[in-house]
Image (cartoon, rainbow, N blue to C red):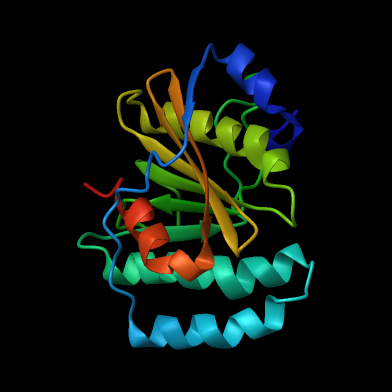
Length: 195
């Protein structure tokens, strides 16, 4: 079993998690200023992906540039890991590769604690990625060794983003879908766990 094998309900049951679902949990996050370079990149890349159903293209053209903007604008050292093995506890199914992990660590060659953001890129069905994203968030929480340190998770098509926050055994799920046209707000949400 691996992260992608979990359904959302299986993760909730296996790790005794409680959900709090509502709209706009993160909507009051302060939008971040976007660099001119990122704004231009987004405008150019949106043309490439507008009709594409390729998860890889969307991930490379829309997700990575936004995460790179997060790292560039962060007041502290962050690192992005893409496609990396993140085996935490294989006996519980917490193993596999992750689309993206953001760490608050100066190390770039190895994933080190704390892992603060988990990003899962999906073709079109955001709900399909809930189990995988949440299982990876649980693994990040265990990896960090501090259940009270929040782990932010997001599932995205590149153009649409939804967010989850895991703290202790409570998963807060924002039912609002955020558009890449709100990139400043998405960046603000991603920045909310950088403390």
